[in-house]
Image: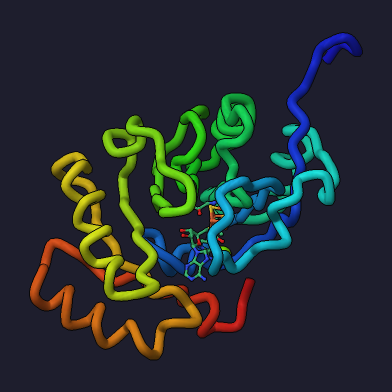
Amino acid sequence: MSKTMKTTQLPVMEAFYTIQGEGHFSGNSAYFIRLGGCDVGCVWCDVKDSWDASQWPKESVEEIVAKASAHPGRLAVVTGGEPLMYDMTELTNQLHAAGFQTNIETSGAHPLSGNWDWLCFSPKKFKAPKEEFYAAADELKVIIYNKSDFKWAEAHAAKMSENSLLYMQPEWDQSEKMLPEIIEYVKNNPKWKISLQTHKFMNIP
Ligand SMILES: C[S@@+](CC[C@H](N)C(=O)[O-])C[C@H]1O[C@@H](n2cnc3c(N)ncnc32)[C@H](O)[C@@H]1O
Ligand SMILES: Nc1nc2[nH]cc(C(=O)O)c2c(=O)[nH]1
Ligand code: SF4
Ligand SMILES: [Mg+2]
């Protein structure tokens, strides 16, 4: 590559090879790329350290993909922070070129970019999602923190495309209280499935 050619640099908080713990791909080996930076401000966010992008070193897309390629799995999950604060075109193109399936975890609060094989959309009360995510998402994953979130979840589900998957995931610290309610809700509303943060039970990243 010529010296004058610009390559995308992205703030990387951490990247690790693990098991996808949540949603439709739960149980699959996956390489996680966690980008720094988020302006959504969820009170119960489990990675608040990710919010300030300036704390995390910038890496070129080439470096990020080279590190991912060192592992046997070819499923990449891009998360954060909020990955769509950045243009994801080059990262997804280079991941594809290296043979990866590209999955994303996003709140939908920023414009959609990149070429995704699977998009997990987890809308938040703290910063409204962009309308384009309802059609683009493969799975909706609503975090249930209190009883009012069931009605809120239905409002989002009503806007999703017909064949998308619908998940309710208990907020981790409210699980003891809310999981029994979620179980009853899903039994009564079978279009929904439960997603648990299984990596936290397995004590893996
Ligand atoms: C940390 S976020 C990063 C990606 C993106 N900012 C988002 O919120 O979708 C990854 C996933 O974890 C979920 N999550 C964050 N904190 C959680 C918590 N305390 N309990 C359960 N799920 C949580 C989010 O809703 C999202 O689906
Ligand atoms: N194992 C594992 N699975 C995950 N699924 C979504 C995660 C995320 O933080 O985006 C996550 C994570 O941090 N670890
Ligand atoms: S949008 Fe995601 S990363 Fe940002 S605060 Fe909410 S859960 Fe955390
Ligand atoms: Mg997580």
